[in-house]
Amino acid sequence: MAKLIMTVEQMQDKAAWLAARNKGIGGSDASVIVGLNHWKSPFQLWLEKTGQAEPEDLSDNEYVYWGTTLEEVVAKEFTIRTGKKVVRRGLLQHDDIPYLLASVDRLVVGEDAGLECKTANGFAAKAWDGDNVPDAYYVQCQHYMAVTGAKTWYIAALIGGNHFVWKEIPRNEDDISALLEAEAEFWRKVEAQEMPDVDGSESCTQALAEKFSGGGQAIELPSEADKIFLALDGLKESAKNIKSQIDEQENKLRAMLGDAEIGTTAEGRRVTWKTQAGRTTIDSKRLKAERPDVWQQYSKVGNPTRVLKIAG
Image (cartoon, one colour):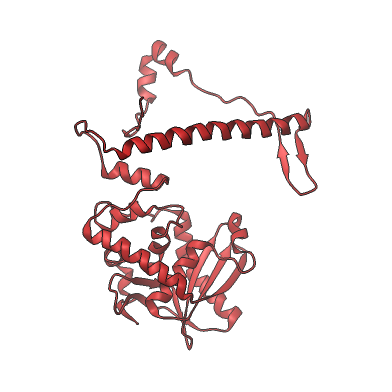
């Protein structure tokens, strides 16, 4: 069901590998498309796939570096604990749907299966409890099974540097069908240069600012804008009410604590109310007035940003 279009050796040419990946949808893209990636929005991914934005350079990212460096360690540990033999394969392409790609970590010898290797922060350990697998990784593995036709995908993770887990993820035809439908619609929009829907993620906000730099003339907005303004008014009012309710509950805890700085409950919850030292700040207005030379020497101007303000 899948053919090899780039060997492991050829993938060492990072620029060539990234160029190949951008011609289709890979495993890490799958979770973005269905809205399960916390770091990237579908809109940002669409900009990248249509050549309107460069993918973020993660070469200096410590998490990415150690994830790549420890991939072989995780794979070896998986073989030790399971007795299964694994091999590297390269970049695969679906036989019938050319935009479906898979840079699989390993394939399992003698089985219709593959292996995904992960490293995770210790704070994420709960997401791996029992049979749990983080949603984004589950989708990634189903994507690989859709591309390769495999019946099973294993996932192994080194958590917090000292806790190893591995799970077996069976092929789920219903999930794959829904995923392929979402990926097909996304790729249709890529090929048609049709903007996807926006969402409320920070990634989407940044992507919109990157695509639209400003400087255009005033326009009359479509009638749909009035509905958006009404929705915003209602949401902002709800946010004020929720903030007030949160403040009330927190004040109840303050009243319970009194002079105590730490409080615990029988259920294992813990709250602290401690005095912190005051924050040291610089009176920039006074510094500019009395020592403009020093102010000028150490002042720093940030990058320009487009700010959305709603009037009326």
